[in-house]
Length: 82
Image 1: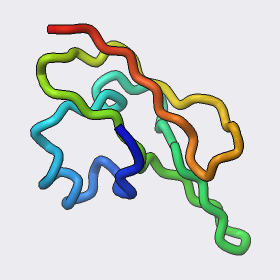
Image 2 (image 1 turned 90 degrees about the vertical axis):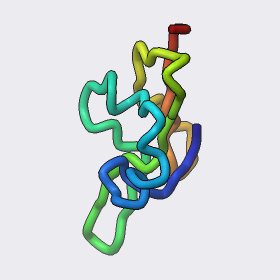
Image 3 (image 1 turned 180 degrees about the vertical axis):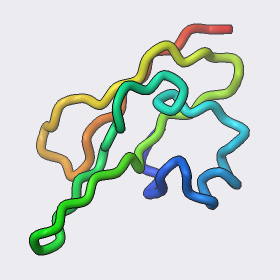
Image 4 (image 1 turned 60 degrees about the vertical axis):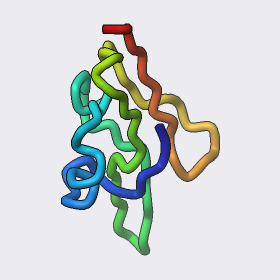
């Protein structure tokens, strides 16, 4: 789990981590933006933070937590054992 600095649809992300389950991608509700950037008057949002697991765990729910002052929002996930 952590800051991958890549969105899930990035070719590099898919190549390196496609063998893992992405908790938010499998249980998502909404876009799950974890990084918000402002450049001049433009604002960009994306999900570059991920929680991955092997098939031993089943993602049940994943959500973006509250803003506590970091430049990234926390991504939280619940799992069950398979």
